[in-house]
Image 1 (spheres, rainbow, N blue to C red):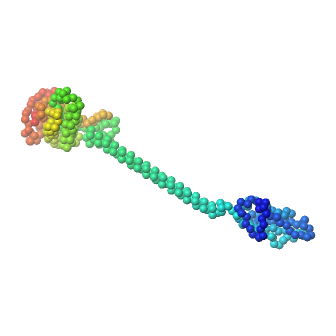
Image 2 (cartoon, rainbow, N blue to C red; image 1 turned 45 degrees about the vertical axis):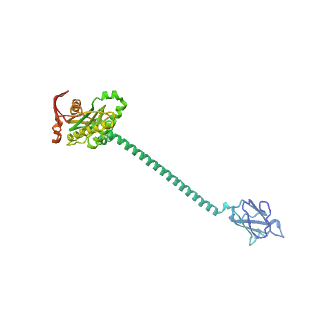
Image 3 (cartoon, rainbow, N blue to C red; image 1 turned 90 degrees about the vertical axis):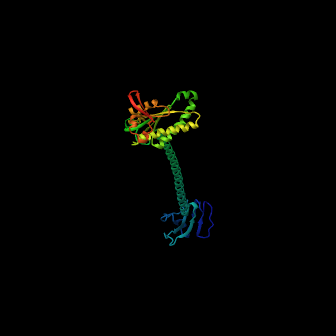
Length: 360
């Protein structure tokens, strides 16, 4: 009986479909002397490990047998206590669901491994892609920072000399004032000032004047850059420059005189093209100076010392369109420049007394 349904099997070998829950076997033995004294024992090979105890029961039941091959052995004992020499045997196979086959689990294992490998590969590719994106972002950001640093460096070098900018980048703001001022034995200082600037400003207006000065002083800047002259600053309509700082120059006087003559030519060319024309006075002096950066913020490269003060005094004493210089400059001039001196003046210089000055 299979799940209480009779199995009409004419063979002692049969198959039980997967999912069967209960299998019942009923048997009997023949005895014409004392049937009531018959005893039976059974063993299901593949499930039981030994024969059952002798009993008068004529049936045995098995439930939820695992898939596999089985043999049911049944033997009987008569009233005289004699057992069958050979048991009766029924062979049957309990079929399995597809998921109960080892091949199914092996397949599942391989599918699982493939899935795991795929997931690992997918995650690895995703991580690599993410890493590439991060690297690209880092490269872009690094390039942006490099460009910003380049702009900052260019701006800094437009404000300060290259050597000073290099030193300044290596210092912190706490020791700038102590570290960035240097003494120079020899340098030439130039002050160039526009004549009658106030009157021209009143006539033309501040906007036009600023534009005009920007165009003119830009010419001076280009010349200073090409000749190795250091522009210090502009003070209103006054242009201040130095030669021999921050890099010493043995020919600082000759170079500065050439520069002074050069900016006079720049002014002449500018006046030919501009509706607003200017004239200029230039003062020069040579001697020891202290140059550098002081303070901790909004600093500029500047020059200090008596040499600077005297150079500043020379400019207002100068004849319009000429170059006024001191004895210290004259003593270092070459023969060609000396031949260009057109006048000698003894003047009372504020804070210095009487001084010999000269004009080119």
